[in-house]
Length: 220
Image (cartoon, rainbow, N blue to C red):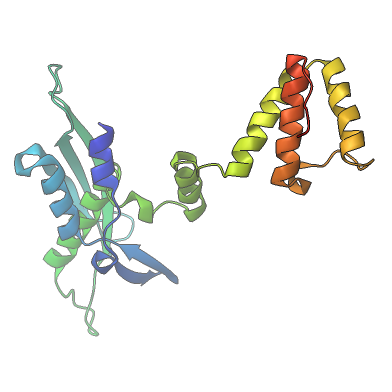
């Protein structure tokens, strides 16, 4: 299922995207032909269908065509009553264009546009082009959540080892480590991670291990 969603939700190539100004806002959209192509490639030609539930001039504003479309797709093989089919509804609209004389240019073309818009809204619920409607910060947070963590540096790996040993030490052993540092560091405060060098970190790790094991580090 996740593989199907990833294929549906995959961003389109920039050259496939289109822009328009609507209400003073610049919007990016995907042509319905590319949405249909994505449906065919993921589900197969016989793996999805759409039904126009309604398409008419709006009752409140007759200058708009409003369409409702149901998009169904077979997302998985199943023995249940649905047969693996899932349906989503979408509603789209299109403003009627008129000539300078007030005549409607092409009502059929406006209806087609409203149906296409509704189909894209339904397809968006399957993940197709959904990234265009999402907040950029939300997408960035999601990418960060699922991104592969960067490998630790040699210093960070060593520091994690030292921290693990330090957490396993008794209070008495910690005091011994502090006493050792007071001499080794010539009275300087115990350094924070950002203040440590690799040499200091290695020396502290070696001493911590020796104290934990009840031994003594012998200088050579």
